[in-house]
Length: 398
Image (spheres, rainbow, N blue to C red):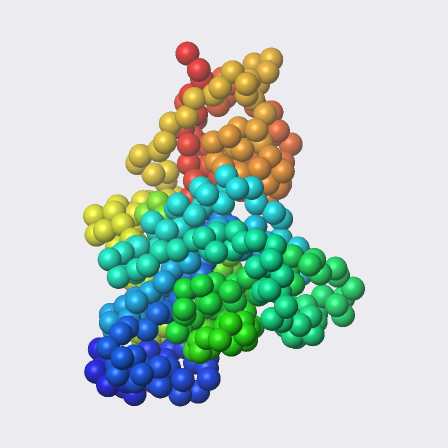
């Protein structure tokens, strides 16, 4: 890691999209060195889903670089802002999560983040610590901003032009996120490019409270497994860092060839060798990612299973066995969408759609769209496959 403020700032900013205001990170590093203290580098994550995916890893890797440069990372779990819902990139109001959902997600988010950043050099906070405020404090906060300033964000402008409603909760979101920076005394805040407005807005809130405004850094957005839209749980195009090794390997191999350069640059922090065939680059990427999160032995097993299923067109050697529950059986038959929903983690409507696409197989043979109900005798002992990588061996209850 380079030693001087100028060299350190240049290194930390090298693959960022924005490092604003220009030169501010170097100035803050110089001042922090003179004051013999680390910078406080903030990242806020709203626990709106139970898993961190590779898209989050892009920003978490940058946080780790700040840690390795001797700075303090402040990871804010947005247990209160998750109740509001970030409007960034949204065309409509997000559904409101329950407190229990947020708590479950928050617990897993925190632990999963430590697969990338250093636990010992991370200050973990929940913004419920300060956002569970009195009405007097809330009114003082909202007086620091104007509606005109909040409505400058592109997401809101697009929705106004399209005649789509904007909730007061959504207007409040950047104000609350900005106050997070006040509460933790952030010197720097990181986020994806979709967070640029929120990060800059926090500077306004800090100034209103008499703090020196933070520098901001935005990182590129990782495309999902479709190679098009941003990686997101809501789009179903994500690779969770907790995905089983064989699932992670298979998902990486499903990424379009055209996205390989971006994946190498954002996840491996290196350029892909253009002389290597895309499929081999993809396989090398899958190996490295699975090894990173699961270890070498799991990687070897995952690759062997991938080849068995996709090159040799055989089912995996080890298949999870599931038992038909009494609730699934009616008059000696089983409703296939209900079976898929119970044992493959999808909805019944999604299962019907997969049937229509020929994406559900029984002992290797595609089921027809009309195969909504099958006899127990036909299912007992058979291997049910959903999609390309999910297999279950079905057994009748004793």
